[in-house]
Amino acid sequence: MAQQQFGSITKTVSATGTPEALGSGAVRGHSFTFVGMKAARTDNAGKVYIQPASGNDTAGIPLNPGDTITFTADSPDDYFTDAQFYIDTENAGDGVIAFYDK
Image (cartoon, rainbow, N blue to C red; front, side, top):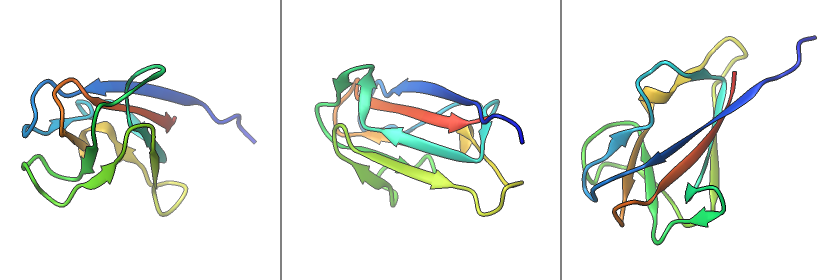
């Protein structure tokens, strides 16, 4: 059995109403856990939205400051990439910390 490895991505969004991809697609993970924080030990001022598309006001999942949500792929061989998740914010400069398994 192999030891599980984890990594993290910190993503802030510079402008409200303009969702930004979590990354370029270079990071793959079986699961991603998002924390409503703009930096280590710094909660957001407002809600962030995790969504599967780049459009503003699409059906994003709201995440309050400090809250978490996890997305896990269906089978052990399936994965997500960081480019599949878009982050939208109520306040410029807010964001997420995303933890993923490698």
